[in-house]
Length: 358
Image (cartoon, rainbow, N blue to C red):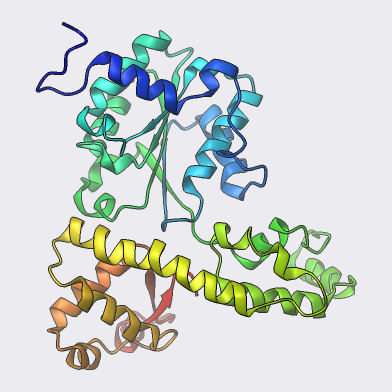
């Protein structure tokens, strides 16, 4: 009877099979290198320590645009915990957008893990929920796991705008922390390709800057790298493929520029505009949303004028404001208010718009 599918969801055997496939370290104690790259971002170096020394107790939710490496950071966290001595059978990966796991409740999946590990407060199970927000009532279940003291430590990822639409905000207060992972910054890029200047950090910012001025930093080489970085953006998949273009005195800029535009348009922009946002918010005309995005691109760093832009696009201003909020929640753009000591001046000057990755 246990092997038969019911209207309630997949069988225990199916769940066991899927989780076995998603957790290869249960058999050999190692995270495959193709899943956990050797090069780590700062979040990966911090997250495993935060989970291991969980004080104050908090779950961790990693949010950010698509293709910035959230899943890789979690695999690297699993690897770091294995190296720190956490038994492999206490580390569980659950990719919640898997067709089988989509049919299961978070409660049933976590209970399955707890039975398999004999987890206890002294030896909790570490749960890694990839695409956490695909789980039904994910925020309410995290609240339940926390409030009822289930013997689990939790980390999850999401790039879905549904995470910011459907959750009950009060559920997370005091229960989980949100960590934002964005595209690479320039200093991370230099570290990634092994070109970070060695600058001694002094006790004060002034002394650190003075040391930086005295150091023989290859300014010309850094200028070339800065140009390349500005053209291809900060997405790690693209950065890691650029090493062939860095050789010689005149790095090739055109090839990575064209490739990055193609990849980001299909993988980041179109996915968010034609799938994520319509699915989460019921937008019936995603083409208009894409057109609005390109109009916004001409306003980067300028003070937004919603009234004139909505008129140019043939939108009402409430619709324009709503669509802009969708693009912000999809981690494509963000806005900043005018900086001033006077709140009146802040409100009067309006906001400036920036892209998450230039």
